[in-house]
Structure formats: C-alpha cells, structure tokens
Image (cartoon, rainbow, N blue to C red; front, side):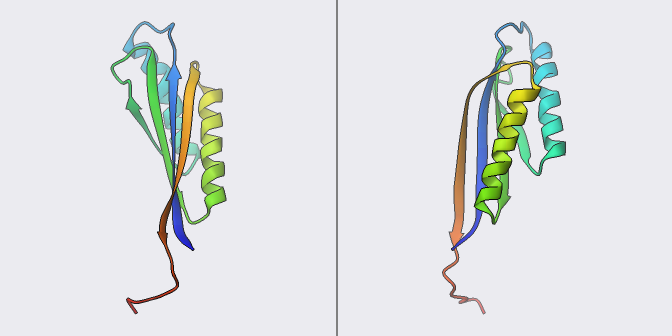
Length: 108
C-alpha cells in the first residue's frame, strides 16, 4: 500500500503578441498568485523567466489519496488555462508513489 502521492503539473504558456517582460509578468504572475491562494498547491514560475513570449509554470501537491491529487492537478490546469490571457502550448502531469507500506513496523 502506498504511503502517499506527489503530483506535479507542468504547463507551458505562450503569448507571442507580448513584446516585453513587464507585460508578460503582468499576465502570468496574477494567475500564479491566485492559484496559490485558492488551492492547496505549491506553484512556481520555472522557466522562460527571461523570455517575453513564453513561460513554464510548475504546480505540485501531496496527499495520501491518489484521486484527490489527480483531481486537484486537473483543477489547477483548468484554472491556468481559463484565467490567463495566453495560450497553453502543452501540459504534463506526473503522479509519483511515495514509499510502500508493507505492514511491517520494524521501528516499534
């Protein structure tokens, strides 16, 4: 039996019409901040910070319930796609099993 699950969502957003970093940050940063405040997630701007027309956003969560992790990451992906003035170029989701509880409590 799994002890828990770590879910990671990675999304690339693109805005080819944007011509400078300040404008891009004004589009991406508010969505990232609102996402952090609305859902139990860790959210970070991972790559493309110096590019004016694209960025990669990473989202992570942890739980002992696989379905909850999966649904939470789906809600986050939907939120990012819906709330920003950019287009989602691609997204990936990975859910990793944390340890296996074999029932033996050797430490007791």
